[in-house]
Image (cartoon, rainbow, N blue to C red; front, side):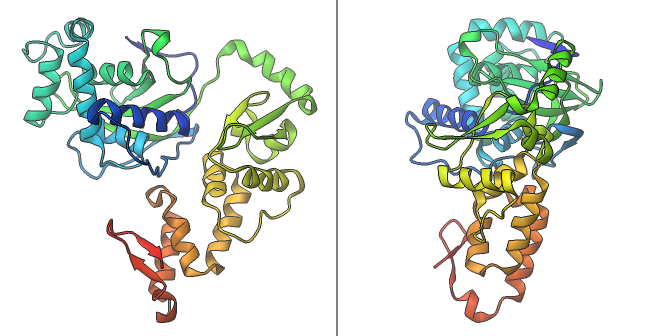
Length: 350
């Protein structure tokens, strides 16, 4: 059930957990996993201040926001809605109790399933019943910033066995005026508060910094590299918060070693554009590495720039979008002939 005024706010849900949820939704709706899922991962900062992202359309705003979190775009909102409906239909008794608590007074529907289905059909925005349904479906907490009360309201999985991740999905909600539905938007930056009881232990970590390290796990989930706490804290306070823990990444072991060398020695991680390395640097706010990649964009071949841009979220990275636009407008014909537009209207190198 929903709770307010949390003592601590968790980290955003990790990439691999998002990928797992996206696959499970495909299986629930279509009966099989998709052949591949290419993510333009939503980048979320947890060092504040609060910032939300404007959606392209306001219809299905809850499910469009969830689609941004899980798929990196708004296009899968109907898939998520179908999965939520199917899940509620299979657990009517559980969600009818939530419906009775959340929707009194409210629209007179037969039950939670009828309420969610008719709301979408009539073009209404989603209520908190939909939020509960998604939390129960995904096994992931949702932290909802209520713009009317200016505080986070957390929705947690009731059953720990269903819990998929220690992270959470963050959304903002603005009342529509009817008393029970909201306009939703994805949160892309928020300020994470730490629980009071951990403050002393964090001071101990600072004193014994050299004895602690952050472990970065490669894409194959077998190979790892370590970065000392003192080094990580110098480049990224966000990364340093994971002292003594492991962080799963989407990078190969070779890329991880280049990242480790950059952090330990300051040596440049090469002259090749690497979207995996850039995505990690952007996610953990490693500013110097981001600037290095952005400088490479100015001098790299146009085909390399386009290939790099196809693997990152341009919507979340205005600087790279502007660089790509300038390169395309000013590119000579000799460079343009090495590009083609594929069936899904994306520029790719020949």
